[in-house]
Length: 81
View 1 (cartoon, rainbow, N blue to C red):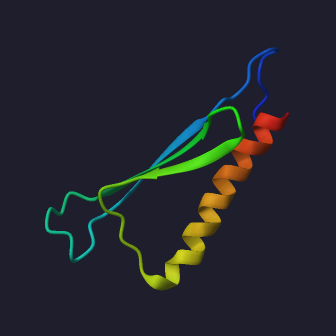
View 2 (spheres, rainbow, N blue to C red):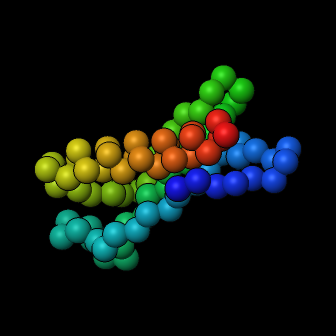
């Protein structure tokens, strides 16, 4: 995904909000939300992950890691252009 930005406009950060249904151990049963934020305090971009609960099976960890890397790469590549 490539985003063409107007002259003198740059992306200084990005935020993604993910949702999944509750897992069987989630007593509230309202679903689970995860916020992934890319930020920059002047020394380069970093990732901030916020959630109250986000459950995943052990065999899904690599897929989740690939998702994070993909989101970061897309934003970082857009910022560099």
